Image 1 (cartoon, rainbow, N blue to C red):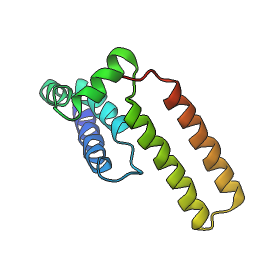
Image 2: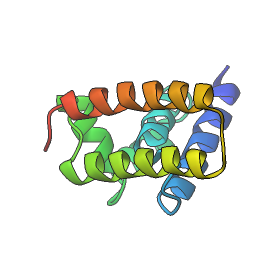
Image 3: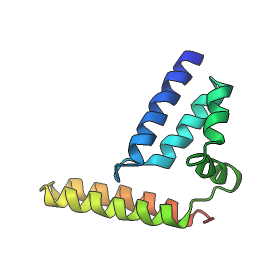
Length: 117
């Protein structure tokens, strides 16, 4: 089972790193998933991720306070608006756009109701 958690953690970490450069890929949730997986598979990788200069504070703030940074909230919201606009521009049906708008609105409400740090 440790191999499953290790592979899952490495995949989530890899996607999270890519997400740091691509605006539509959610970096922090993937880092949280990687930390969760590493906690079940590798103390060394878990400690490295938690203490990482760039990624560690996001995980620690979420773990200790359930908090999301103000800048992260803004970037996430802008990314969601961009994704919806791109879907509209690509000609998706009204039904699909409506489902996407509902899902993105629920995610935005969740993000904006979390404490900021």
